Amino acid sequence: MKREVKIKYFNDKIEKLQYIDGKSDWIDLRSAEDIDLKQGEFKLIPLGVAMEIPEGYEAHVVPRSSTFKNFGVIQANSMGIIDHSYCGDNDQWFMPVIAMRDTHIGFNDRICQFRIMENQPHIDFEECEHLTGADRGGFGSTGTK
Image (cartoon, rainbow, N blue to C red):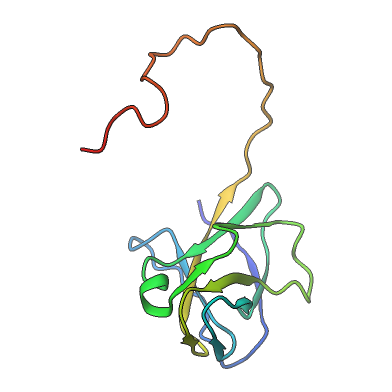
């Protein structure tokens, strides 16, 4: 089912977002400015967009698979969550990064990706003494091979 998402671009030179049907469920986001970072520096990279995500949905923002290799940065919060209420004219999306080496990120470089996901449903937790699933042996019990 297609959903319409309103988007505001903060710069008319940034490449417009594209959803490539059948290629990937993730949509690339780009740096909205040239950025030079020294090893160990932290920066909020502006992504040049704001969106009105439909109520009941959220965006998950993560690095692209090549982000570390190409730019030597890691996302400081591992994964960003943007909920539908972050939708005002000034609510630009950012990617918080830490530089693991000196690096340059150029304007319009594809730096991260996002997908829109349905919010988790309401859950009631039921306390019990024992679970009915098969016991797999605990964390890390499947070995290294």
